[in-house]
Length: 398
Image (cartoon, rainbow, N blue to C red; front, side, top):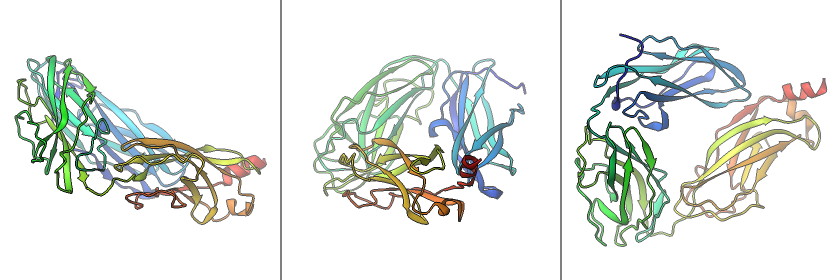
């Protein structure tokens, strides 16, 4: 088999990401970029992996492919424990209308050797037809009967085929399961709930060139039927609703995400989406010795209040909680997020503590003073980042 084949491609079968662990607590995972097939009826597909280290170190890795192409060993430098993303692309060249199957894995080669399971795929394309797909994401965790979702969630449309399409219909519906009819009929609006009910204002249209993707502009109110019983549901987006476009593959025309419908007033629900060590400072009094970055997401059904002058996000040494830093937050709408930078200063109260009991465990906590009325407090803490301050303090003493 040649190293590269030219084919116009759409994804046909794929495996989602699979994680594998290794000695020294270096772990790796790999899947398709963005969690879905990023390939189009064109010449390239992308893979995204992550490597996690439990402490500062250099990690070397390479991607392994089924076609035998030898990709270079690359190095990432962890200045602290954490996770870093790695990506690769596979470019395909050759005669059109061929099928191609293969796999990619992510291999850590230093400081230990370990390899993820293979991410398998099979490509096939009919360049004479379009192939529409849809992805719904960032759904609010909950909504009230009669509530308006508006554009609190996101819908992305894809054309994996070889033909441009105009005005493809997209329906936004509420279902009790994720079983969408294929081909999809056009949903009919009713003020009363039924399984697969079209939300009020839930008809959209989009045009896509071959091989392109685009965010769908949600212009409607997307109102939940007022008589919807409380319970667990799925918010679904269906492209080519009404089956007006003849496609090479219709199995990917629907996508759903979970949502809870409750008559109880909605509340915010803040979670730590990302916690990273941003950089070292100086080991001297009244100076930040380390700086962290925390991204907070609201997965609740209501906006969180703005409290810019309160300690709504705190980063602290879990062994010495007074060694900490904090920041306020502005209002965060449902599905929204906000990133804050938090410096932790030289610990003047107990300078010796900084060099003792290393590494120090730091954790980010949302609302440590219990100022917010949230639907859940279970997701208000991050994983721990372990830091050793001897390098920065000894360096500053030289």
